[in-house]
Length: 481
Image (cartoon, rainbow, N blue to C red; front, side, top):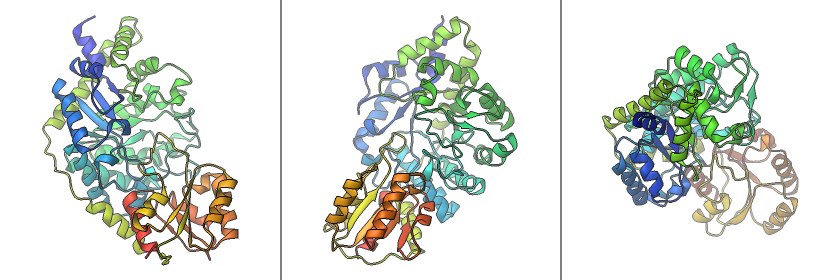
């Protein structure tokens, strides 16, 4: 096989790694033509370290793409390197000021650019039309195609203002599922007309706004194919390329997710996704072996399972994006003004009582998950930073004993009960109801705003539409006045 084929195979891969410095094997893979690297929390210690890491990788080859998931809210892999974390998409949609969304995205993307990161794997333009959705939640701007389209476009424009690449996801749409694709393969059984009106509308809008990359979803859309979108030529080539006219880079979501690996190996999934039309096959685990993955793609060409011209086209699109990015003007990092304004605007229309400086917080929240990887322990930590006399407990699963102990510990003190997506979490909604029967409380809804329907009208409450630290600190400051 030729050196060009080896380079094309490497160029169609985006991989993760472990550690805060570049391993020798990864540096060799970059020098040999690796298309892109994806960073996660495990790769971030502070801003200087990230800048050094990205510079080290680009010293091996300047046209390497370096990407990071950076959607906002609880989802922030860059927290140690970024004092102004991006507001949650749902909070931006609820405030509903596209200019503020654009400023927020520009602020965040400028921070990435200053660290040497040039692909922002955001926004999520999934329409969160199913409140039972276990994975999208406040990662979406809202529940209608109109809101998501409007803010998706503003977000892409803001990322472009900072000179880096934006990546709408998860195509054709992850909003109307009740299964987490990290754990199993979701299926959407809606008509083409329904999918076009809801799921596809934000993608069409963000593509028209110049989206550079689109990420595929590991979901079967039965109206189009019986294969997950990531492996479907009908969806990636027919729908995304030919019908929606997208000419940029298509990346898969992480192929190690169980929606894929329950049915085939990561290596075979990489072949299938590129054959279907993807340009970057993503293997995000720290143990990713780019040399072995490259060899598997080369072997797939030799065995006839993958056409060499398709692989060459994929790698050429990736290189083309890198060339385009090299010519863009980048803004310096900004000062966090947009997220502070989001906090101010969210609180402006809500009444928060003065509880004094010693409230007790029962934080009923979701279990830890790789998709949002919280960058602070929970609400007690946030409140303690504002009012040192406060404390509390974090409860992530059905634990009546822990709740009983928390209620005992909170006796004779103002009680704040926080919930996160209780409407889709039976144990949480039941625990909230039991607490409210026992104690006067203030309820803080930190997930999707539908949680507020679980709070009796006589009980004071507020919503934050996400768990962004700056927003939550503003809430804590107001409540503990």
